[in-house]
Length: 103
Image 1 (tube, helix red, strand yellow):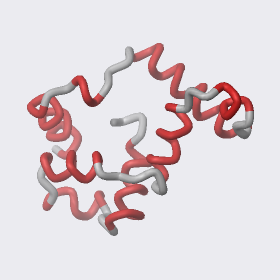
Image 2 (cartoon, rainbow, N blue to C red):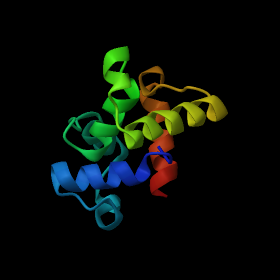
Image 3 (tube, rainbow, N blue to C red):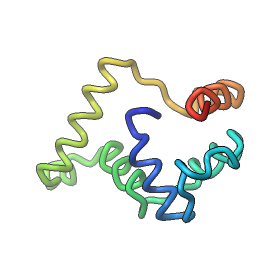
């Protein structure tokens, strides 16, 4: 979450019109999780996640230098921190993590 926080903030503003720094006290952890899950590929986070998740070697080869940097930075982060996928977390773990962020 911390790695992508700026992307999350800008994506919430773009898709939902929610300014997290001003409205975080009114959004429950459950609602935040639901909104985060619903972000589409047209948001900054969705765009970056799409680049990170690309598997087609032909498409990867055609990525711009900046897009390749996004993939490289993500690979380094995963290598240093372990790969923890959000779908592997249960709701309680997600809520606890979000509570820490918003407290």
